[in-house]
Image (cartoon, rainbow, N blue to C red):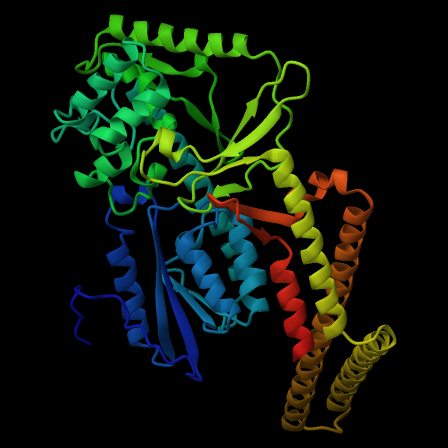
Length: 552
């Protein structure tokens, strides 16, 4: 057979999913450590699978799923999760990989997918290089080799990970920059990616920021000056000079404007005096956490400075003094924020700021406001301003009305209590009948084997009747699963209605304690300049599902 060209190796995606045979997903993965060699490149993996498919015309490729630059030690990968979604929807019933290590290098989770998840979903799994196919009969040796290979793959991943970390630590100690992207104001040298060089454009902005700070300008004042001057914030500037590789995800901070966070981060960064401070984070239990300062790797004079050490230290003193002065001036501490993470401007979409008006003889009065006009763009938003006690009173009334309305709709859409109970009992009776029928079929299957041994049935008759009984058992299991899902849904709906009734009763009896449940029942609050309040509730999706189920 003539070898196919290596160009355009990705199998054609077929949009018709009614194919009666194997509807396959081609899954390929390239991790960071794999980029050192071409043996596991995306192209190579696709070529090997493509050649395998040439001899298996009963397999139709539905889609190709590619995770580029992702680790194999966990399964939280975008393409892999998309593939699982497509399996759940019935789009796929076959998964093909180059080898087991492409599926994953975590022995426990990889074993779960191969031995439990794929068989449970009736998904055929093929690892081409290992000649492993769940549709083929496997020997006891195969059953031992698959877990062993998974453990070897996991051990390899751990070993590679340790070597990469050791190399990074050594590079840090040698004063080499190991970050993915250069800090704002610098670029990576084209000759050496570990060497920082001054960006002639962004460095001027950094110098201006430090000069403003040295002259006594506060963080928010500097933010406004930068935005008024039209300077691009770091993320957008880096994008404008093509410093964001395709595989690197980035977030546009402050919707195209400078923010106090980005300014503060620059003014406190020692990199601008020519030093490298690295190793500020570490991995503990697969989670990235901040390292202690004594664990940082600091090397001085590794690259050209943008500002002098004297100016940097002067700015640090001024910012620290301003912060201490603000703390000393505050006579009363803030009370806990009952609406944390919920408040947004209905015009610009930014989070609202909670401030306070201090009162000498009474409690502080808290105010929610949009700071876009004061921190980002003078003409960027008409502004929002509302007192917290008035806001909570309005939210309490809105929430009470919403709960009453929803509960009324649920009562109208639902069956009467006695009727619902009869429905539950009927479903339970059907489930019991399915279990009894399954038991009867298993007894018949045992009888078939006895009849085969005694010569009452021929082998052909035995196989025919066994297959028929197996089909009937599968039908009964499917029916029972559907019934159990319906019963579970009824119980969930009943709990939902009971929970919402309790919340509505709580609000009527204790409106002064509304904040205790507002954060649980509300997921987002938007307020406009004229104090129009739009509320998005956490229970809306559950209610819609409930209504949809009862309208069927």
